[in-house]
Amino acid sequence: MEFDNTKPIYVQIADSFCDSIFSGTMNPGDRVPSVREWGAEIGVNPNTVARSYELLTDRGVIFNKRGIGYFVTGSARDAIRDVEKNRFLSEEWPAIRRKAELLGIDLTELINKR
Image (cartoon, rainbow, N blue to C red; front, side, top):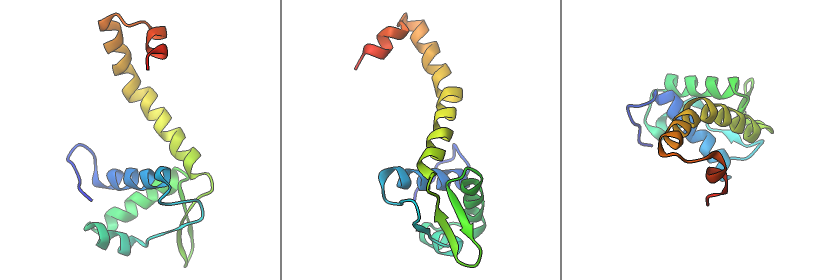
């Protein structure tokens, strides 16, 4: 896994995990690699992976069965979609809207354009 300097590594790990759920690589009920396994595989400190898992747990994407490990929740896709939707509306959409206004693009033109 390659990391960039624009986001914390633990967030990039969580985002990559979410991408694997959307791509179908990981499915509801699947066991998630242990913190140590995943850290060794991607070459990061297990504490960083643990922080990613904490973020994913807080978002309702994975859950921990004590003594057994982490698993993908049944509602993982919906949870990810909600987070991404909120991120888009709060971070990306305002910039797109400003750009459209500067270019004189009407909202209906944006909607009907393919």
